[in-house]
Image 1 (cartoon, rainbow, N blue to C red):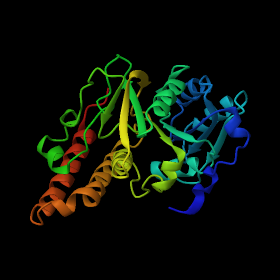
Image 2 (image 1 turned 180 degrees about the horizontal axis):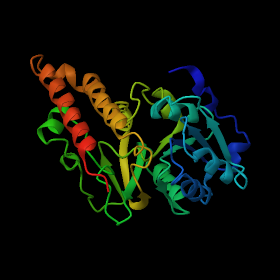
Image 3 (image 1 turned 60 degrees about the vertical axis):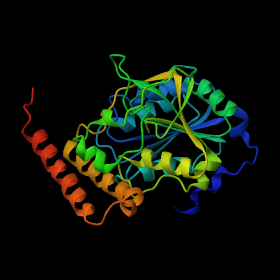
Image 4 (image 1 turned 180 degrees about the vertical axis):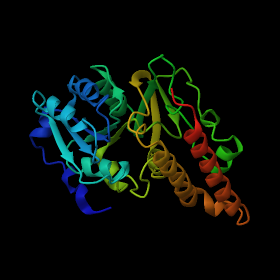
Length: 296
């Protein structure tokens, strides 16, 4: 990471006086949902700045964002000349903020007007928490299985044929629940901790960057917690629909990087090539299934 995060210095400027939270939204072909997402963020009064980074969308995303900008002075919009990846765009957006708290929100997440202020209260009341998420749900009201989860294990994922439920953690009935990882669709962090950790690992172009961040937060001695009493609607998969094969490739590539970063040293040398073969065999099968799936 470069030194771009220097802007987080607490200088008591106007942005801090207007609010406490800076929001980063990274878009890519998100025209279908981004305007509603931004307007739901706009309704949260604890937000003092919203930075949208567009990763070279080819649809109407820019026009949708610019329409919101007309009545949202807190919003700043930057368009990249090419797709730099989700993690790099998040870091780019965070470098434009000066607030003590940063929230990363996917453009297909819709908030209530008090979602972020309630989450901030939880964060302040639990000083050991370094990263907070919420319980996400889909349009049917079903819980997003990524809301509360364990660290992923490549061996376990391959054994369970990629079944996400193998890492899902049930709610424990408490307002705040300590977990190993939350979903990157909505994550709140103290800005100084984000800077301390060097931001997102930009080698994760898409997928697993949230798992990596959660793990590094815990390794730094902080808790990762999910607010079970705060819910947000997550549509899911909007940006990936136009290039499903590319998205699958990036997902598998990120899983291998995650394995090399956190698991490889504890894995027997003879097993590593088998895991690599299993991972990319799974990619080929997934790609073939998507390619030959009936279109309705």
